[in-house]
Image 1 (tube, rainbow, N blue to C red):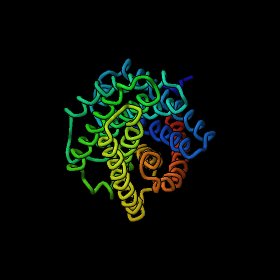
Image 2: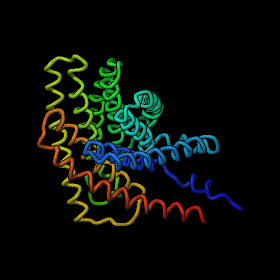
Image 3: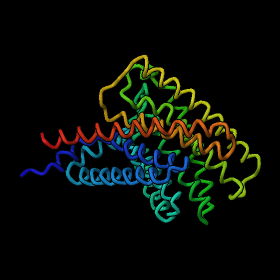
Image 4: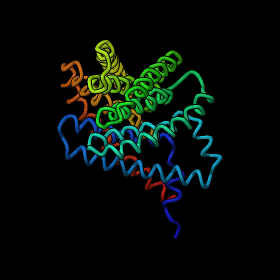
Length: 315
């Protein structure tokens, strides 16, 4: 009997990494809102998806190296970096600092390997997936700052700050070349337009919260607080614009890129709550409310993805 595993692994695209990103950040947001049991359940789902993606990565590299190289040149390949960083950050919140440190090493190596290839094969105009250059970079900033605060590795604060600034640079580069027609025709990844701002706000909030522990000057601490507030404000404005575009141009069919819609929704919640804790309490209720649309969409996408994989396994 033919095993259904091999054909199923073959059809999983790099963009599927957004599923691990989404479930991981939903776990973080639920933890920040106090729903610990649900947070742990979503963390387990995220780890399961991440493990499957690692299997896909290894299998594809061993059996079809040319395809692996081709996919490594595209922005969706960076979802692996972001997913590892997000799940690593959740591990730090559990108190599993060595696991978080291992995740940072893995994510950093992947970033170093993949980023030059993606940049070399840059295309314009840019679409939602190109904002993953910012997301992957800010993911390292978030995890690095979490470890700098939660462990004796305070030195990680400086490279985390550097990655935060670099991530903002990537956002500016992408947004100046972005096709805003994607708000009308995008299949889901256009939401990373807001998600990149959200994870940048999260990074600013984490760094601002770490400033005292790391002994940074008051001026830098204040600058990070202001950056977090500005970024979360821009993110919420983009979130509203994207919701309006979905109402105006409904796209209800399944596409794996819809996982890149769930990620910004969950990230906006987590970022709002983090910025609220570090500087502006007024956004805390926003974060508490916005976690639930992200949870609902992730549930819908899990069911839809499972159905797609079952169909693929039978063909």
